[in-house]
Each structure stands twice: as C-alpha cells, then as structure tokens.
Amino acid sequence: TAWLDVDNENAFVEMTTHLYKLGHRRIAHIGGLPRYNFARQRLKGWRLGLEAAGLELADGYAEVTELSFDGGKAAMNRLLKLGTPPSAVCCVSDVVAIGAMQALREASLQPGREVSLIGYDGLELGAWLDPPLTTMHQPLQSAGQKLAQMLIGIVKGETKPADNQELVRASLVRRGTANPPM
Picture 1 (cartoon, rainbow, N blue to C red):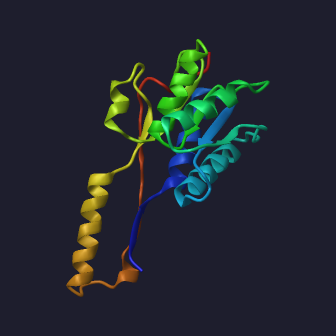
Picture 2 (picture 1 turned 90 degrees about the vertical axis):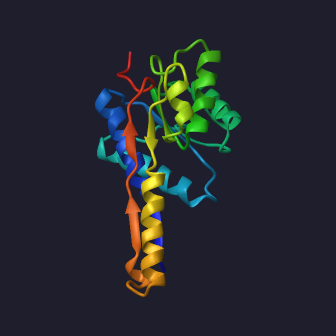
C-alpha cells in the first residue's frame, strides 16, 4: 500500500524538546480524541519528549478535547485549575492553541509570557495573533507534490505501491508564544 504522512510523533518530540530547552519543566499536552490516529501519535510524541528530557508525566497534564477553539479553551481552563499548573503546553492543533490562548487571557495571563504554547498545523492565521502563535508547520504543498509524483510513478508502472511509503517532517515556526518560563 502506498502512503504519505506527516511524522506527528517526531513533531511532538521536537515541540516538547524545544520547550524543555527553553527551561520549561512543567509541560502539558492538550490532545485530540483517541479515535484519531494523529492524536494518538502526537500524544505519544509528547510523552517520548518528556521521557527524553527526564521529566515525569504530571497528573492532569494530558488533556483530551474536541478539535475546536472551545475545546482548547475548556482544556486550558482545566489545566489552570491544577494545584501546579503547567508553564508550557503542546497543543494538538493551532485552533485548539488559539482557544487555549483565549482561556489564558480570560485568566489575566499573557500567552507566551506566563504560559508558553505551541500549536500544530502552521495556519497562516497564527502569524496575525497577538502574540503570534508558535507552531509546527506541516509541509502540505511539498507533501502534495510528492504524493502526485508517487501516484504518477505507480500509474506509469515505474514503481510499486509498497515502494511508495514516506513520512515527511513538520518544522518548528518560532513566533511569540514559546519563551523561557518567568
């Protein structure tokens, strides 16, 4: 079977590692429902990132929510109510991260200052937020081109479907929401 996918697991290892290198030790995750394969991969990557950094998984730091603005806001509100809230959060998507940013503002906290956030998707909208959202950018255009090349090769008989399996990497886009802890 031919396939092309973004390496969700590695992206969240990289995201978590970036926050750790900034000095964060209380790194939470707002993830999607486990029925989504990408949500399970991103959760695993976050956990592997914590493990690689020598950090323990703190109780309550793995939130699961709907993939929406309201879901991100509700999950961040739950994280803020913990006895020791996180100083940084890895979000399953940019939309969830934007909701989390709103929850921080409503709690009189500045995103990227009191709590760092990183989203995932690389939505153009993130650059226009205040502060601009740090995100993991998916290489959709190059992935689409690669997928087209794979299909053409299969149709022409130049390659077999099983020879066309590839993971592409997301890349960190540093903006204003991921900074050293205060």
